[in-house]
Length: 68
Image 1 (spheres, rainbow, N blue to C red):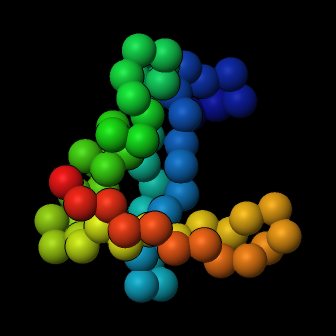
Image 2 (cartoon, rainbow, N blue to C red):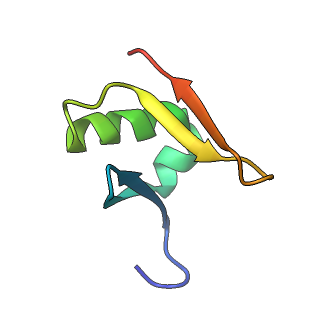
């Protein structure tokens, strides 16, 4: 995975453990990226409950619950 790679990597921290989710160029261009990410998360952690948090532009933590 070099500087000019055809894939995109997202780092996901789940209870202190870091996971790297890789997305191919086709996934990024032709699929719903959020849906593809959630599928990869469920493949990695089947017990995942759908609660996602991220830091906004003011560095505040925002929580979202997704049910699939």
